[in-house]
Length: 70
Image (cartoon, rainbow, N blue to C red; front, side):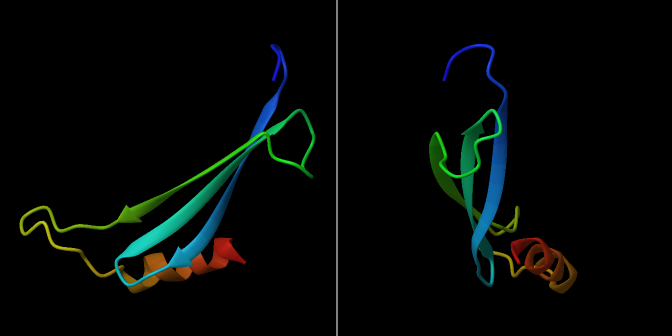
C-alpha cells in the first residue's frame, strides 16, 4: 500500500458461540474488493466482571449478530 491510497475494512462474523464471537477483518486498497491486502481475526469472549467466567450472549444481541452475518 502506498500513501495516499484509500482503504476499506470489511468485517465478517465467522462463528457465534454461546459466550463468544469469532470475527475476521479484511483490509482492501482503493476499491479493490476481490483480494484483501491484509486479513486478521479475533475472538471476543464475553465475561462477567465479578466472576471472570464466560457470560451467555443476550438473545437480542445474538439476533443482531445473526442479521449482519448473513
